[in-house]
Amino acid sequence: MNDRVPSSSDAPLSNDELLGWIELACWTMLVLWPLLYWANGPAVSTDQLVMRTALLCASALAALALRIRRWCRKRGQTILDRSERPFAKMGEDSCSEFPVGRTSRAE
Image: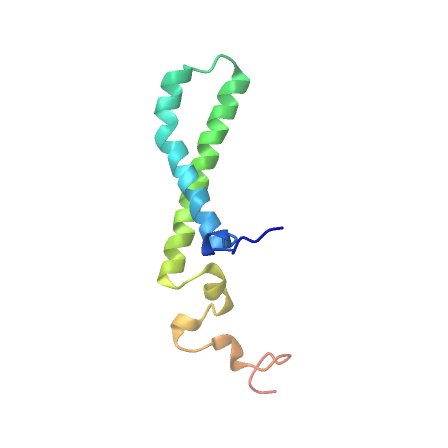
C-alpha cells in the first residue's frame, strides 16, 4: 500500500519546463565542447568527425531555436499570432474589405 501523500514535486513537467531543460543541455554541450575535444583528442575516422560535427551543429541550432522561442514568448508573440493577422500592423485588415467570392466592389 502506498500511504505517501503526493507533493508538488511529483507533478509532471510542463512543456515549457521540459524545453527549458533541453535548452540547458544544449548550452552545456556547447560550453563543454572544448573540454571534451581536449580529453578525447581529434577524430580518428571520418565517421567520428561527421558525428562530432553533427552533434555540435544540432546542439547549437537547438539552443538558438529554443532561446529565440523563449524570447518571443516573453515578448508575448508567437509565429502563429503574427501569421493569423498579417495585416494587423497596417491598422486594418485589408483582406476583409471584400466579402468571400467577390473580386471587386462593383459587384
